[in-house]
Structure formats: C-alpha cells, structure tokens
Image (cartoon, rainbow, N blue to C red; front, side, top):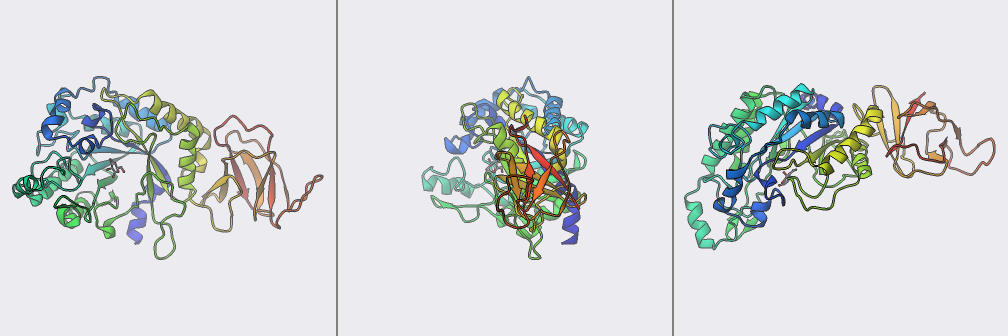
Length: 431
Ligand code: GLC
C-alpha cells in the first residue's frame, strides 16, 4: 500500500492530463468504434490504411497546446481496438510505417511532449479487431456472422498467441521510448456473451504475466484498472461521468482516480458529432474532479491530416486562459476536509501543504456568498485570478443589513458583476 502511494505521487500532484485517440478511425471520422458499429471486415477497413497520410502533423504544436492548457501528462493510443499501431513494431505490418505516413508517429509525438515537459503515458488496447489470432467475440466487428462461420474462424485463432503478441509489443513500448509513466490497458469484458461467443478477461490477456512483465521493465509505471486484475491497479478510471464520491480505500483514504472525458461524445475525431461541451463545462469538469480528489484526463481526437480541429483548440484555449490565473487551485490540490461544507453553487479544492482553501464559484451569486462553518477560521481572502482582496462578515452580522444565518457562517462580499473569468475562484488563507 505504501509503495503504491509513492508511485502515484507525481500523478496526484499533476491533476490534469491530455488523452489522445488517434488512428485510422480519424479518416471515416465517425467514432473510433466505427469498425464495430458498422461491422466492417479487415478488407472493408483497408482503404483507410492505404491512404493514412497526416501531412499536417506538427507534434510540437500539439504539445504546446497541451502545456498551455495546463496539462502535465499525456496518454496516447499506441494501438486502439482497430489494431493499427502508431509505432514501428516488428511484430506486425499493420503500422504507421507501412502507410503513406511512412514513419514512427509515436516517436515524434513522445519527443515533442517530453520537450514541453510533460510526462508520457501509453494507452494499449487489449482488444484487437485486426489480429488474425484474436478470436471473434461479442465486441468484434464480425460478431453477427452466422454462428457456424464464427466457430470455424475461431478454430484457427489462438488467444494464447495473441497474448504473447501483446507481451512482445508491450516490451517494445516499454524499452524503446525511455521512461514511460503510465500504461493504460483497455479493457476487459469477461462476462459478455453473444452469438455463441464469450467476452475476454484476465485469463485471455494472461493479465498476471503481462503485469509482471510491465513491472519488470518499468517498476515505477502507473497501471490502470482495466486488466480484470484489480489487485494490480494503481488508479481507478471512471469514464464519461462525474463521480460525486471519490473511491475510498479500506482505511478511508481516497484511492488515486482519474476521470477520462471527451470534449464531444467520441474519442476519435468525429466530424459530425455535435455534443461539444461548452468552455465553462470543460473548466468546471476539471474543478469538479479535483474537488473530489481526482485527476482529469481530457481527450483530443486529432484529424486524419494531423491537426487539432478548431473546436478542440477553442476548448484547450479556454483551459489555458483559466489555468494561467488559477492553476494554484488545481496542482497539488484535493478534496477539502469534511469540516468545510461547500457553499451553494460552489466546489472546493484544498491544498494540504499550504493549507489554503479554494472556493470555485460556479453560479455567480448576488453580492453575498455564505460559507458554512468558516467563521473565525479565515485570516485573509482574495480572488485568485487577480489577487484582489475580498472582505467578509461573520454569523450574519454585517454593519447594516444583517440576516439570520446558521452559526458559523462566513459571508464573503462579492462584486455585483462577475469578473471576466469563466469560473472565478476565491483563495482563503486559513488561520
Ligand atoms: C472505452 C472505449 C474507448 C476509449 C476508452 C477510453 O472503453 O472502448 O473507445 O478508448 O474507453 O477510456
């Protein structure tokens, strides 16, 4: 337990990362599960491989956008469920070097993000819809073929050979790209059943062997929790929802967790997806994660030509503007101690080292913000974005216009007009 805590120290300090989902699915541009959704065979999907040519890729530009947004680490899909590899793996031909891109794209991206000071994590898909030894299963694009046909295909597929392929590839990834900080395996579905096939889990992946190998090659690496082997996990990874309660260890402490979220409803570039979150929703999401003791990893799905489209850039810029002035309430911060009950329309984050409490005002109130239980506890208050002082009164007693408020209430005096910042944050110096 002690060891696990130290492995994730940098991670819980960093709080904010960038996820990148990039592969051939950027070309159909209608979800990274397009092969599954449209039940495409290897042959159907080949047209993308033959034409994958990200001629506008500037990995330095990606890395700058991430750093400016305040992100401190990257997790990138080295291989997603489609099976396509961004690096020059010697265990497959299904890789970027054999497309018109003609080069190891992973190397370029890793180098660029390192140069901007970000840590590097690799996402590696346990599913593989292209590999000839991967048995057809309930998630596979060919799952609805006649059962007899599937049985015949699976007679020639050996999942043990596939598990070995994964170990070989993971060995490449963990020995040829320097220190890797996170390995993000995705995902297990052992209980699924469909058309005479069953899902896959730890027995199929040979998860224990895989973990041993990973720990041997990179002892400090952080492992996610999708290998169907909970005891090996360093982090919990809720996806596409905002947990209201952090996952707890048996001793009551918060288990390191990372919410993974998208700007719109897809991970891969999706041209026509319209459910893009507003800039405020994005910034709020970061605050809400840290206010429950978690990290946020925000996803970008680059286009097939290799750039972040304007919708993604607008949101990264929104993070940049907010983080420029408010990062102190995010890095090294966590959930506030229980004694501080959040005021209406706010979320709190807390820095246990500096003992400062951050009140993020999500709904701007009219002139007064009532903070339960803080009377007598605050030495100084200011807006974080500009360091301007805020005054207050306690227990409802203003010099004039008093009102009955629960004992212990501290009331901040706020300007009528919200400062020009998407979520204003108050920094409280406690006594
Ligand atoms: C899922 C999806 C996937 C995405 C991932 C990210 O399990 O299969 O497409 O990569 O979650 O968390």
